[in-house]
Image (tube, rainbow, N blue to C red; front, side, top):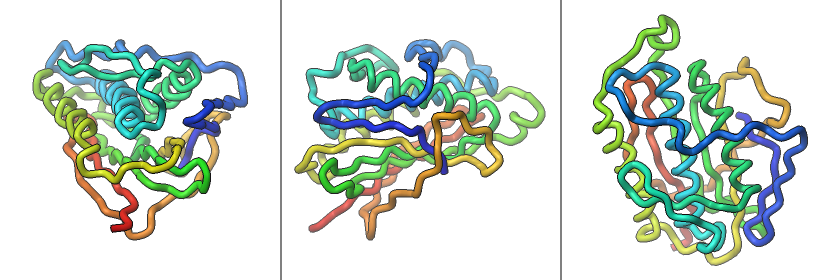
Length: 229
């Protein structure tokens, strides 16, 4: 399991990127315009979906103040994007690398961890498990799926993230987040990334969310959380 070596704080954000600046990835570059889905096109769609999903989780769970977010139209919905430049750089760096791993079929899972700043205890784990069509990666063929159906998949997950405040416990203390990425042991690892433990929750409650399927990549989402009831 690999993760980018950074420190982010919800009260006073710090991003310790320990090398030269990484090129950022535009959040509006992956367009759903054709029914033919190539490996590269699917990687762009899925990595952009992650970018918006992470921002939505950060807003809905109150990791950063609401005034730090801007409203944008995407996927036929009103989405919220964190405007803090350091947070944007972090998320864009991660999603750019994710796109590269998606194109090689080596991205297996992405986990957004929400943890207490004071104690470091993990309170939530938002998991996105990824299955890649091996025939596409090995033979370079394309798949077909109507853009509208992919859009519907993404809308379903985004709406569930928005409604998560109705079933997740209120976060009573300031929290921070991290992104964990699971890849095969032989994957090429960028200099800024290092190994991490799984940061699991003991006896969590688990809620399965909807899936996003491009026919090249399938993403199954769920959230696990600490429950003291």
